[in-house]
Amino acid sequence: MAREPFGTAPDGQGVELITLTNANGVELRAMTYGAIIVSLKVPDRNGVLGDVVLGYDSLAGYVKSSPYFGAIVGRYGNRIAKGKFTLDGQTYTLAVNNGPNSLHGGLRGFDKVVWHADTMRTADGVGIRFHYVSKDGEEGYPGTLSVTVTYTLTDANDVQIAYEATTDKATPVNLTQHAYFNLAGSGDILGHELQINAGVITPVDSTLIPDGSLMPVQGTPFDFTTPHRIGERIGADHEQLRFGGGYDHNFVLIRSDTTLKHAAVLRDSASGRVLGVFTTEPGVQFYSGNFLDGTLSGKNGTVYQHRTGLCLETQHYPDSPNQPQFPSTILRPGETLRSQTVWKFRAE
Image 1 (cartoon, one colour):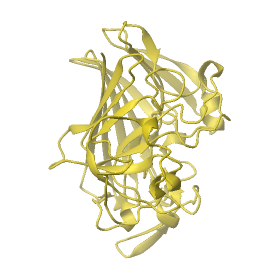
Image 2 (spheres, helix red, strand yellow):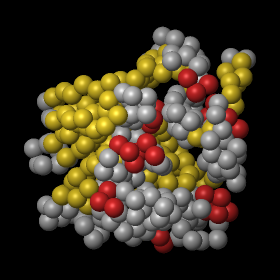
Image 3 (cartoon, helix red, strand yellow):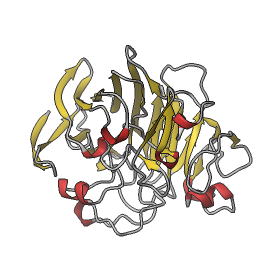
């Protein structure tokens, strides 16, 4: 474990970069700004380490223009329709920052604040425990929310992400990790093979807000119950693909309880790298990097072209505060939110 200065946030707070390395040389680097995973180096089939997440070489890139590269997003990850929700008879208004909707916590969500960080050792690895207190009324949300997010890098090449939160007023909470993966380390992700353990999605309108129904994936380009290359059907003539500009949808995971369950497997045949995703969450947002357009230059000057990264954001469903039929995201005083996601890396 190592810590070093990594610049100064816009509010004047110093930012630190923390590096974790396991017994196999796998390296995770995360910073206190946004609890952002800056890089994640894992081996290919020949044992060669490569960085499999998109991002920047310095803090400045994240501050200037980042589509949530590697960040913890909250207080509510994903979209809330028209930036409004009603809770216990009171209507709350949020910043509208994504068309007509509120996205990923608003103008200054959890991705744009400085977190406190402690390093730790566990029986099977090393970790970082990030902590942030979101004040009552921050970005329009009720309640003072105390959040802890822990990244643990194990000697089995797993990245364990644990979330905990408590509040003093009822509030919606939907936390997720927004890493953009490219298991090849370069090029687009259209050749990656993906399998998702989901039989339905929550279809969306043209502003990417769920319409409240569930759409079976069978017979559609959204059927990843068996492995498919991402580029295989992404250009199909389907209304949901047109609305998303590709895949940008919540897949409802097949599960019977809230224990840690298999959600998805991502493969890159060229490198042999495989990512298994496990989670206690009820959904995973598969986003195929549709809004990357070549205007962002990242690590080592790499230009992030269309679909050079993808996200598998384990979370609750979009717009749940306005959709009572969806699993609730309301956290109340006296309760503790606990959630876990695990990324399991291997090579074949």
